[in-house]
Every structure is written in structure tokens, then in C-alpha cells.
Image 1 (cartoon, rainbow, N blue to C red):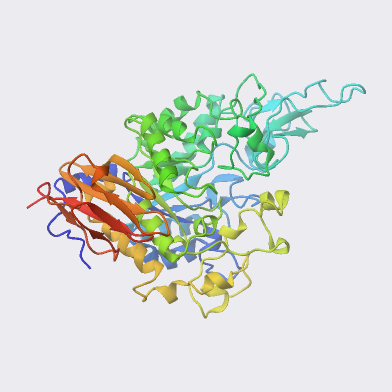
Image 2: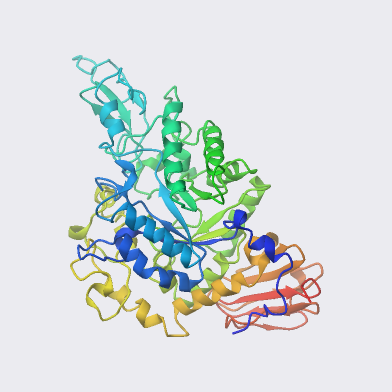
Length: 575
């Protein structure tokens, strides 16, 4: 297989390999520890299981791993309800196991990013347990407390107790929970067992920055910052306005969820967040080569917030929003609109793109893609300007796993079943073998069932098959790494012609043209789409190695269904 890299290696490769800049254009492989590999026979994945499978992850050609939470937790939201930020839950192992994982990952050339859940804790965290004891203890204002609306204690016969405002939990119902001991409500944007921290208190910020330092001292390479736009709330506790029905969408919450009916102006997305992100970046900069990617959960302003949080060199390095994680089918026009929106708000910001993760239906099922469509969409993802997150099993082309109601673990799914079946379907165990019990994940019954259809696509089935989804991901990741423009280059000359999306990636003197037919019909790209500099004419060299089909003439480029075309500009490469 040839990518013409011998003749077209990029000048300035030292910049591409600059350790301080490792995150720019990195491909990050997300591991959901509960579902990756069980090493001790309890049906739950763990850190030692991850260590066992790290050589496989490295073989893909990714640059880093992102570990979903493994901290001490009651596990009511599967680790996103943290009761101790600085220890490993016994379910997953020990700190010594984590240190061993770091060593092995680094030996294999993989960076390690960990999921930091800073916006809220578990209600079993010592901070909250102290805070709820009284209104005058040392932690009394570490969480968001408010009196009832209508009367102070809710005992008046004509004034029943009411929540302080109309804010909603993304998991359903009011975002306020009454605490009988304090005789106040506390805020929870997620489960009632996940109270929100009060970021207006600098002591809270200081404590969380110390958490980050704890893990950086252990040599982690970065963080994925969960719900980064939820950190601050409006001090006045103003009601969110109702969002007009024509502006509602299901980008971050299912259509059935009333959360989509509000414009979330006051419960999140607050301007005070910028100052804290500067503090967080300054803390990261105390250590060498540490980077962060933030999760921006907002249905109306995701792209705008992404660019705000990553602009300049004193905020976090990159963010991702939910534009490519939503149920909406991604056609050429939709993708171009997202890219244009990002570029409209961005000058020097950096994005991180993803199709799937632990919170959404796997994209082959969301978009009903066959194998050709999956490969084409994978190529597109890995050709966009920005870094990329891949979710475990994505490289195998896994569809959403089947989980029946009586097997359901996710409280979010239980709340909105059957219109929304929750997140368990994307969290079913990783399939390693088509013949081993439980697909090689565990020797005992797993915490979620192994999907029989997924098992047919197991790693061992695809590993030696040159036509498999796994083989293509490895090829595409190798292709991307062969060209600096695909890693760090700017995206320019974005065009949509019917179902074909095309653009160029430019880095220093290297220029690569990319075209994608996002349809199940043959499509043509004609010279009329270009004022000059026709990318399949003289002066451009088509790039081989990905088995895509195309034909071209003086007047047009023909792309069969779900096919792509890449070409490099001659004369702008190394000798």
C-alpha cells in the first residue's frame, strides 16, 4: 500500500512532532473501562484489562487514549458521580494499576487523557456530606443551595414549597432537590445524586485545580473535561425562557425530553466560565505538554461556545460539540453548514470531532449506514481540520447493541423508555472473539449483555481480513499520518456540489484536495465548480492507497456511491 509519502513528506515535520503541540490533529481513542476488558472475572472491565488490550489500541495508529471515569463512585451514573477524585474505584483496580497503565501506554507511544467531572460530584462525596449538614459549616457554600420559592420552609398551608426556578435536569424533572436537613434546595443538572458544585466560590475552584495537579503529577497527558459549559450558574437564579418550538432540536437530549423546551441561558453557558478556564489552563501549564478537550453540551450555541473556550493560547486547547453526535443525518450540506459555522466564529480555535461516544447511539445505527457508507464517513472525519475522537468498537463498524428493558442499567433510559432507550446500547462489552464466551470480554456474565450481532464483527474476525472495517481504519489512520496537511492544515475552499463535499487542507507548502460522495448514487464534480486550479488536472497528483474508485476527464471527476478522492498539489512538496 502506498500513500506516495516517500515523495511527498512534509517540510517542517519537526513541527508536526513537537511534543508541546501533540494534541493538534491527534486521534484520540475513547475507552469506556466498564466495557473494554474484564481481567478479574467479575463481569466488569478494569484497568488491568485495559493494559492487556493496549497493544491492540496502539496497532490502530491512534495517538492517545481517553479513559472514561474510573474514580471512586457509588456508580449511580457509572462513574460520572465521583465520591473521591484522587483514587481508583476498587471495581476498576488501584492507583498502582493506573500507574502501570500509564507506563505501558507511554511505552507504546500512546498519550493518556482522563475524564475529569468537575461540574458536580456524588452526593456521597465528603464535600457534599459536610455541606448539607448546616448553613454555616466550612463547606456550606461549596454547592448551589437556594431557599424554596413561596415560603422559606414549605410548610405554609397556602404556600406549598416550590423549586427556586424552572431549571430542568437533563435526566428528567426539576434540576432542584429538596434537602430536609438544610431546609433548602440544591441544584443538580443531572441525577439528584449529582449535586452541582458552586464555581462562584474560589475555594471550590482551588480544590478542583488541586485534583488536576494530583493527576498531572502522576504523568497524565491531558484531560477530557465533562460538561465544561455547565460549571457556572446565574447567581440571580433567573428562569430560563421557553424556546420556540421551531428552534428546538435533539442535539444533546432526546426529543421526548422537556429539557429541549428551554433556552438554557441561566443554568449553564455563563460568561464567568472563561476566567476559570484560564485558571485551568495556567494550572496545566505548570506541567509539560498537558492538553485538554472540553465537552460542550448545548443545542443552540455549541459551535460558538467551542470557539470561545479554545481561542488564543490561555484557554483550553480543544473542544467538541454535539453537531456530529446528533440523530440528524449528515449530508454534504449539513456538514458544510457545521464547518462554516465553526469557521465563522473561529480565528485561532481548534475543534475535536466525533461521530460516536458513550452517550449517543452508535453512528452506523443513527444514520443507517452500510459498510461503504461507514468507510466514507470515517475518511471524511479523519480529513477534517481538527483533532478526532474515536469510540471503542467504532473501528469494527459496530451498530448499537441490543439491550432489553429488563437488562437496562442506565437511569436516563429508564426515565424515558421506550421513546428513548438510554445509553446502554452504545456501552455493551467490546467484542474481541467470535467464539469465546462473552466475546472474550469476561468469563462470567457481563454487566451488560454481549450483542450477538456485534460478536460477528469481533476483533479476531477482522484482524486478518484486509477488506474489513478494522483494516480500513488502520489504513485511513496511516494515510492521515502520512500528510502534515491532514493533521494540522487549515481547511479552505469548502464546496458543496449536489452530494459531493470537497475542500482543501493546507499546511505550509503542502496542499491536499479531498472530495467525498455522501450518497448511494454516482455523482460528478465538474470544472464549473472551480474558477481555476482543477484538482484532478495537470499539477495535481491523485493519492493512492485507500481503494477508492473514481474516474476523471478534462471536464469532470466522477465518484461512484460512497467514494472519495484525494490529490496532492505538485511542486509544493519536498524533493
